[in-house]
Each structure stands twice: as structure tokens, then as C-alpha cells.
Amino acid sequence: MKKIFTSVLLTSCICFAGIAQSPVDQAVSTATNAASQVPGIGTALSNIGNGLKSSALLSSFKMPTWLSSVSKLSPSSVSGASSLLSQLGNGLNPASLMQGFSVTDWASKLKSATTISSVATQAESLLQNIKPDAFKSGFDVSKVTSMLDMLKK
Image (cartoon, rainbow, N blue to C red; front, side, top):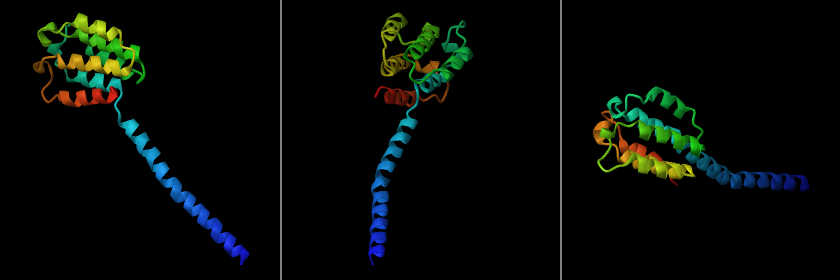
């Protein structure tokens, strides 16, 4: 009788431990999945670059080379993201920018970026100051803005 009681008790403890652990595992799994769904700054930058018409860029700006550099960007590299974003801003044809937007003033704010969040803020600022006709047909500015908003959190 003692053996049966001990076996039942042990089995019950194991079952309850498994049930109690399950929600924790699920919460960890959900948090991990959510974190993996947040796009990196490189994804947002490449979407912006791929969305621009070639006429929106200066002839000296080499988009394929820039996109290649963006694809190698570390998700946590503030200086790399800032540098590449600055290159894009300086590579834009002034005619493709909203009147009153100063790339020089924007670039000076970008130089003081110390976090991916602050780089994302400047990327959004640039994106909002590019004329709509500078983007390829079907480019969804709000989709990239949403990515940048996730990076700012």
C-alpha cells in the first residue's frame, strides 16, 4: 500500500510540475517569437532604398552597393546604421525632397544618434520628407513607418 501511495504521489507531483511549467514555457516562447518579429534597422533601410525610384537619387549614388552594405549591417550597430542612413540622405536628389527640408540639418541630428531608436527616428524623418512621387508605384510608406515605430520602442 505504501508503494502504491508513494507512486501515486510521485506521479501527481510530476504531472503538476509539468502543468505548472507549461504556461511559463508558453510565455517565454511567445516573447521570443515577438522579439524575432521585430524588424532590424537594416530591413527598414533596405525597404526605403528599394522603394525609391532611380530618378530620386543622384547619379553618383550607387544603390546596389549601398543595399549590399545594408544587408551586412548588424542589428545593434548604431554607427553603421547612422552612416548608411546618412549616405542615403546625401544621395537623394534635392528635387525629390520636400521644400524646406535640409539634409544638412537632418544629418547633424543623425550624427548625434546614440541608439537604434534615435536612428529610427531620423530614418522616419527622412522618409516623411521624401516627396511621394520619388517612390516606386505601390511602395507603402506606412509599412516602413510601422517598422521604424517598432524600432523606436
